[in-house]
Image (cartoon, rainbow, N blue to C red):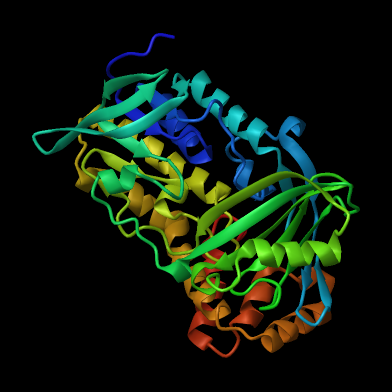
Length: 398
């Protein structure tokens, strides 16, 4: 493999955010290097793997190779055991992330980006207080690659942002601590995702069941960080497993954190852009971030290529990406964050009431908009913000 000593853009991380940023930068004329520290894109899987059709369709042709199941139904389970069924929220998919992420990288490669795996970024390279490249380890050798722009797509524990002097810290209440099992030998409905709420099940979060077939599923839990110190997510999830899937076989286990804040206030510095989980571009209520990451990365990649053409790598120019993010999803995410703050204060009785309300809504009118509007009822300003967010947002809140 011929890895040059200089590229216009170096992207750190080859998940959906990194590969989409690389693709759009390369497609628009920039030379691009992607550095991925693992042996291949999409591993380890640290995701429930759920996405909406409308969210990913603009970025890649749907391919059955990376779809485990098609989702048309969502079940919401209240603390008192009642269930509401949602059938009016569009089609979703449970992915095979390893195959999906590789497909996104292949698209980037087709546009001219070079992917190097087992390449671990170690630091940014500075000269006269200016970022001029990246230091990385590849096959046991420390190397340096020079560039004009670094795009940090290195996940929730992003180092690129910190290296560049961006405040990436999170409050404990704004990061969910999560555990997920992939289960085999169970009976589930292949077209139905399920969500369980309540402080006895998952305080400050929820338990999810994302089916991958009639007999396999991702079953996980997320708990708000400040509520997980006395009893951790694994204990809660194991208790749930004993009740719902006592005889299941666990084939895969993953632990991790998910940011549930508004996006970073500072997405760019001179010569640096941050995208995806690294930028906290995640739905603060659901914790979903694949589609958000790709939307942000498309903007970042295009702006990076434009910067290369105009030889403008200062933060003032790169803020075109920030403005585009705010216009497409950033402002909406701020509203969702306010909703999350309210959700955190909901009692089990209120969750019971919400599910009861949902049961009474006609099937053709039951949507996420109706659900969230009911959840923030009593706060007129937030209700208006929610309505506006659904009008402005280009994707479903998933």
